[in-house]
Length: 205
Image (cartoon, rainbow, N blue to C red):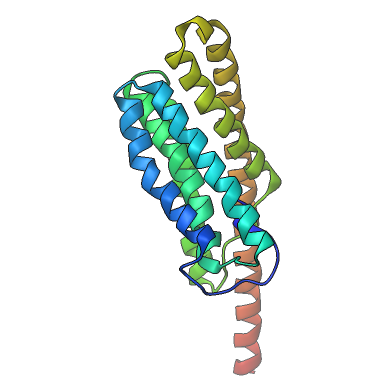
């Protein structure tokens, strides 16, 4: 996430931060396979390695001015894929219910649709809202905590309710942020249509 920091952005591909992001992406299927097989301790280890590379990615990008457009795409993509891998794996094992996964996926599909509509009107993605960041952070806490309860049954009495609480807040804030994105997208598109109509009237007159 550090590679999204402000500063000069380059078009370079082969930078150390980008290579670390590629490593994180490569760890996603390993992470998912470990969860499905019930090897939660190893899955948590992979998650720790991913978090360390995420930290180093941002630190190196800022320190050595290696912030790139590709890195700004890869970094959040890796974060989301780790979340979805954990969601899918824990859902398959019935640690979390299917409807919870459906809630998160439906919200992502809605944002994808919003992005397509905005692109068709010549707009880029909407700025990330702080609620979306908090929601993602809640899920980042929730899923490893739930995995911790699976890996160490003696800690399940505490890990499960805490993980479930973070997951519930994450889902709620995810949709709250999604509603804000939807409202903003509607506002932007309406303004664009009004401006287009005004231009058409001017040209016609």
